[in-house]
Image (tube, rainbow, N blue to C red):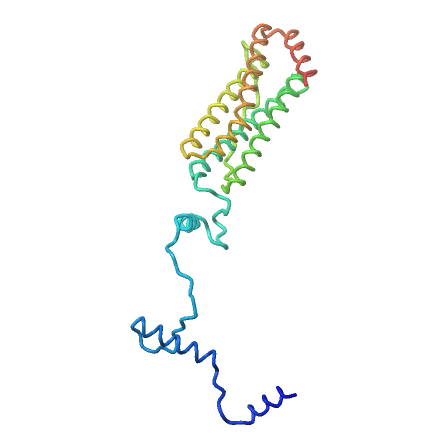
Length: 254
């Protein structure tokens, strides 16, 4: 009760209450300002300690410079996932390889259609080329997915129409088709090596690893497999019975 009475009395009196803490602070501010050679400044507060602003560290500067390379939100023409090592040359080379894979797949599909005819009918060879067509198309889609993952734009190109007939007067259709297949596999291998060189020049280790692990290793095995088929067909010649036995072997394989 006594405390309430004192507060009421102070409220009723018109004498100002001296704020001891504020007066002490003002006095100290005045002394500090005088020591620093400054006049009394109402905005100067010796009790306020603003944190110092040191120079930007090297790491922070590197982060700022790196963020300048990437697009701001709303820019739909650029990728947010793209890194500096994935150059425009890598993007173009990937699109070219996608086009090669689709073209090879289309040729194999035409071979399948040829050997599946009723007047040709070598179902084992037709089965083999259909499987190869699907495999090459799968490689194209794998490359497309990787292009998208790295922030590139997939640019599909025109596919060259393949030939329809694969008969050869001297070699026969089976040997001729497999020799063509061997040439296509070697061409594909050469293009993958060229793509690897582009990635190596750009110092893109991720793209190099992808080409080696997902494509080149299987490509070498495919070349060996087709080369063995060519060797067997050369020994058989173009005789119909020998080719029929080869076809049965292909039909029962895998």
